[in-house]
Amino acid sequence: MDTAGAAGGAANAGAAVTTVRALDHASARRIADAFLPARWYGNRWHHYYARGKLRSDPLYPGVVDALRGSDAPVLDLGCGIGLLAHALRAAGLDMAYHGVDNDAAKIAQARRAARNAALSSVDFDVHDLAGGLPAHRGSVAILDVLQFVSLQSQDAILDAAIAMLVPGARLVIRTCLDDGSRRARTTRGIDAFSRALRWMNAGPQRYPDADALQAKFAAAGLRAEFTPLYGNTPFNNWRVVATLPTATSLW
Image 1 (cartoon, helix red, strand yellow):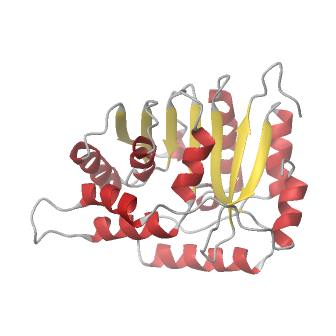
Image 2 (cartoon, rainbow, N blue to C red):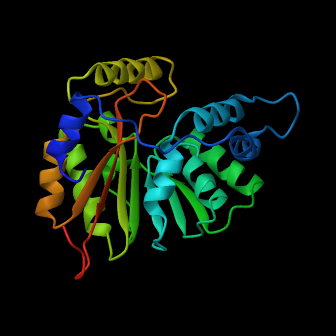
Image 3 (spheres, helix red, strand yellow):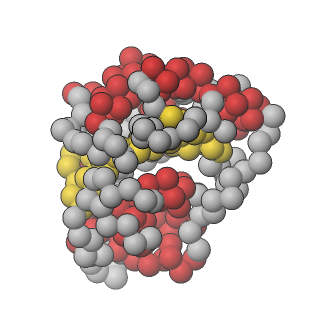
């Protein structure tokens, strides 16, 4: 599917789930072990969260597949505890990675886990996207972020991310699409619940519309592909990959 209309129609029609699967138990465990506390009696919340997330959600294998074949540096906007960096290295992808998030506690966990796993060419910073994006040229990942900011902020983030792309780089988005489906309603409820539990420091505001995204990408000369990426979860999550076509690319 490479049109937003197709994406929206497929979602409403119950499109087949992408074949991308979550990580296997052993791979998830290896990554999650980097989040173990320094002492046996320490808090293991992030360890168990990482294991559960990596085993149940096809997000990271899906993003790894989208970035495979490009060596452009990756800027991960709203990186959380930095699981994408671990997934990239576990898959043998060694492009430079820079993760930013406005949650200082998560960035502290991300830095500690990256040191524990001896990840190279990886760094993390506390950064509030409301103040603009950090300087970058290359690929950009925006994973489960857009729904937590206003429509105006979504446009600003996407415009800035698009401007960062270079030939061979990819803009990779994972988001719930606002298509009125049961999955979309479930996603909204779980996002609000996550905010109530204080795992997320913001509640959902507006979910992107597939047609609006496609129009923005087309206006920028980008080719976009929309793929369902909810796996065995109840969420209406889609992977959107936008790229700059080369001179020999065919639409």
